[in-house]
Structure formats: structure tokens, C-alpha cells
Amino acid sequence: MAEREPLSPARRRQLVVGLAVGVIVGLIVSVWTGFWLWLATGAVVGLAAGAIMKPPGDDERPTRP
Image: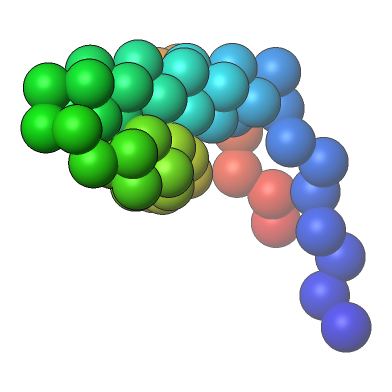
């Protein structure tokens, strides 16, 4: 099984920011529409966006041989 590298602080921060933005947007849309499941949808989309996006500064990291 391949070794998994631990999350870098920038990557972890990216996930937290994505989750926070998703929850805030989901909360706003849920209040606006009156449908509370938008909160969960916003959280999931924010977490997915945070996981997919590459944090700034990852290009300067040396590659492993």
C-alpha cells in the first residue's frame, strides 16, 4: 500500500476555509429559501472545493523522487 503524506498546514487551512465558506453560503441560501438542507449542501460543496483546489505555494515544493 502506498504511503500517505500528512496534510500540510496550507492544505489543512484550505479545507477549513472551504468548509467555512460553504457553511456560510449554505446558511444564507437556507434562510433565503426556507429550505434547511441547503446548509448541508453548502458544507459539502465547500469541503469538496477545498479538497480539489491546490493551496497557494504548492508549486514551490520540491518533488519527491
